[in-house]
Image 1: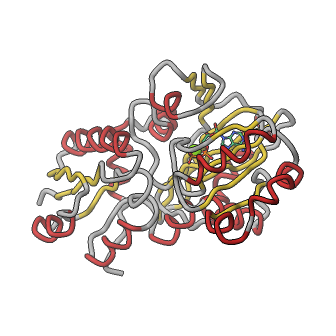
Image 2: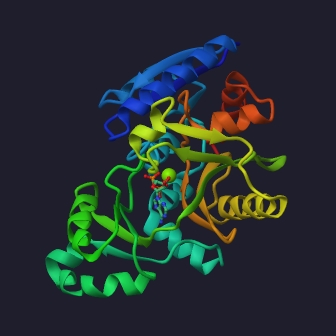
Image 3: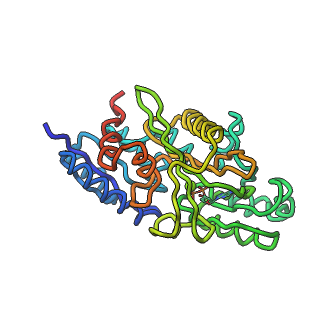
Length: 316
Ligand SMILES: Nc1ncnc2c1ncn2[C@@H]1O[C@H](COP(=O)(O)OP(=O)(O)O)[C@@H](O)[C@H]1O
Ligand SMILES: [Mg+2]
C-alpha cells in the first residue's frame, strides 16, 4: 500500500513564507519517491482534516512558533499520528533559547554569557533600572539581543554601546515574552546538523556561513548570493572534531532524536560556543541541513525519505 504523508507547512508563525518553501520542496521530494502526499497549510481545519484523511504519518515542514515549539507535536501525539523530528519536550526546550542555555551550562556545554529578561520583569519589577549592569554581566560589548523564542534572526539586534540596549530589548520583546542579552562572539559561524535513530547518531559535516553583509540576518539566510557557504567548514582537524562532538552532545542533552541543527560560533582562538538548536531545520534552496547532507552524498530526495522513514511511533 502506498503510504499517505501529510506535509504540514505555512501556519501562523513569522516564518510562514520560509515554511511554505520548505514544505513545497518536501512535497515534491516525497511525490518523486512514490508517496501519496497531502500538502496542508496549517489552519483551524488542521485537526478535522487529519481525522478525515487519516495519513500514515505527518512530515512537519513548519518553522518557528507552533511548529517547532511542541504545540503541533503535542497535538499529533494526541491524535496518534506519527511525525518527523524530535518529540514534544525536546522541541519545547530547543525552541526556548533561555532554557536551553541553562541546560547547556549545567552540562558544561559552552554558550555565550547572557542574561534573560521577561517582559513582566520590566512591567512589574523595575528591571529597566538595572540595565546599566548588563554589559559587565555578560563580558562587555558588542551584545546580541534577541527574543528567546523566535527564529531566522527575527527581532535580533547587534548592540555596540549602552545607548542601543533599551531599544534592542524593546524590539526583541515585540517578538515574544522573553528576551536574552548575550555576549556577541566574533568568529566563524557554523551550523552542524545531526541525524539519529535506533542505529545511532550521525553528525553531518559542519557548514560555515559567511554573510556578505557581515550579519547572518533573514535576508542573508534566504537570498541566494548573500551568503557564502563552506562545506566542510574551514576548521582545523582538531577544531572540526571538537565541533562535531559538541553537536552530538547538544543533540543528546536536549533529547533531540531524529534530527537537529546546532548553530555555533567558533572564536578566533578556536573556542566553539553554542548559540541555539533548531528542531525543524529549513529545507529551502539555501538551507543548511540539505547542504550538509549533500556533502556526504545524501541528495534532497534521499534526505526527505530518510526523515520520513524515521517518524516516531505515536502509539507508544
Ligand atoms: N552571541 C552571538 N554572537 C555572534 N553572533 C550571534 C550571536 N547571537 C546571534 N548571532 C547571529 O545571529 C544569527 C541568529 O541567531 P540565533 O541565535 O541562531 O537565533 P535564530 O536563528 O533562532 O534567530 C546567528 O546565526 C548569528 O549570525
Ligand atoms: Mg539560528
